Length: 80
Length: 225
Image 1 (cartoon, helix red, strand yellow):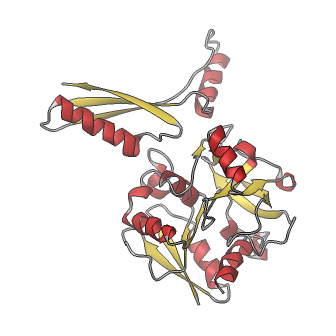
Image 2: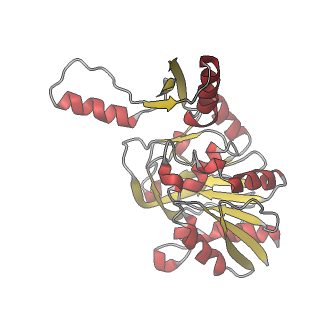
Image 3: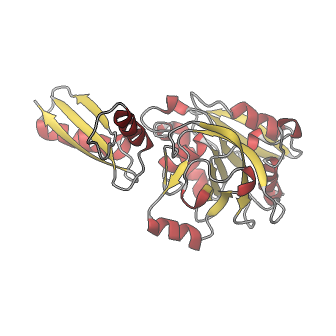
């Protein structure tokens, strides 16, 4: 059982890293990109627990540590 | 004798600077406190120094907040004990919820290491009472995540409660990191906690180019005496 956790900046939070990478692509001649934002991807592996328990653990982990509620949002998918 | 606890996390690197400054101020004595300890009751003030606690993994300060010593910091702060977090220490105070808002990547992404200047926004606190009114104070910054940001409601609250401690001023080149309202440091509502990105402990001896930083430590001591 695995949780795939995605963390991204809230709208309106400046992402200078994303902006810089977006500009780099533009300067390489890759056209058509309006904006680029960079987030985090985290994979959590679980022992022998149910899907419901895994979802609870993933949510608690996000709330308490993995995401900063002031600046970030998160979502996750639990897969067997 | 006023006793300062200087917290040491894995990755703290301004702890010795802070120690030297406190050691050289009359009436004050410093002691290093390892982050695995859990009692701060015998100290009058706590310094959370700069550095890269836990390698800044995940987010700066995010993991340090779960060190045992932070429970002691939170309980002592509720008793009104003076707590100052500098740079990474400020980031830890924010991640712990002791100060509001967030510190995100500098505008322009770069790590900024330079001398800046500050204007003081509230002189009537245990951290600022020795700073001469209107004096621009000079000290260095050295950070990548010092861009203070917050919701409009919270910014209004900071202003209404006089919680803005310092803003970046023109003499040192102005706002280096994109912080909203040029904010360099803030207090909690009760004004017994200060978090700031600039380093007063690196500007507390003239041989370092400025001793303005010592005014902040002297303010803490004056308040106790």
